[in-house]
Image (cartoon, rainbow, N blue to C red):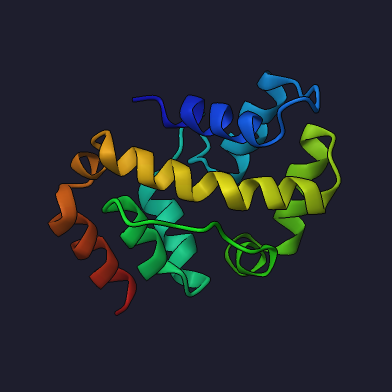
Length: 137
């Protein structure tokens, strides 16, 4: 599964009708959520959520839990204001609109990714728990 493609599609759905360039969105999401090689690095993303105090929410979403979306404040804790501003500039939106769309997209990505075998990529729930335990040391 190409998580970056899934993320881009979900993000564009949030801002349908805005006329955003899909390649620019994919590139910007790759920079914000990615591992630097054009893919989304799940473990690094979970580490960011842990650092922002949202690891349990992210883990719940991966396991199929319901999510309302992340607030602008929560995403600022996770990614930092500078990274979110850079993301918005790279896709040509103001920061408030892009962060709000990102907050709605991320729960869908984590939920859909978990349902489609994303957990298998990290060794299932046990692997995810092992990653989380390393983060809390």
